[in-house]
Length: 82
Image (cartoon, rainbow, N blue to C red; front, side, top):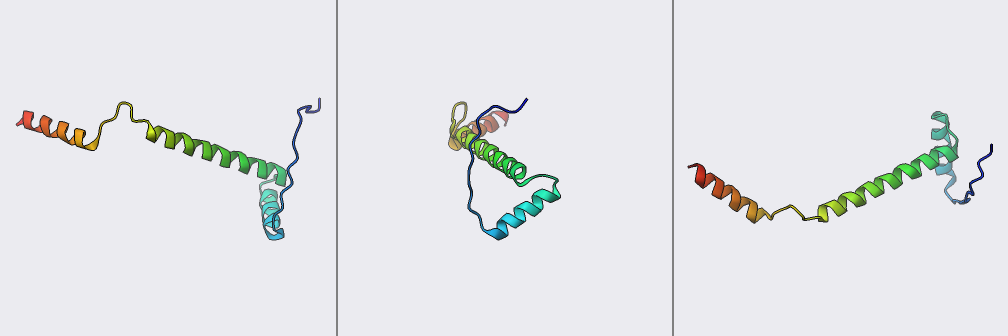
């Protein structure tokens, strides 16, 4: 049964040298340019999503303390141990 999902065509103007490199590399991997480029786009998208989520998690300060508060707590713990 053929894939009935609608697909969008995207035309990309690239330099002939880059096109030849992509085509050759894809062929070495046993893939078409379309397959290789699709995989590359998906990988790049996943990397960007991961980076965005990582940056968002760095902004989340819940359950954290400042360096000053941490150092003070360590100083208090050390003075109790003495």
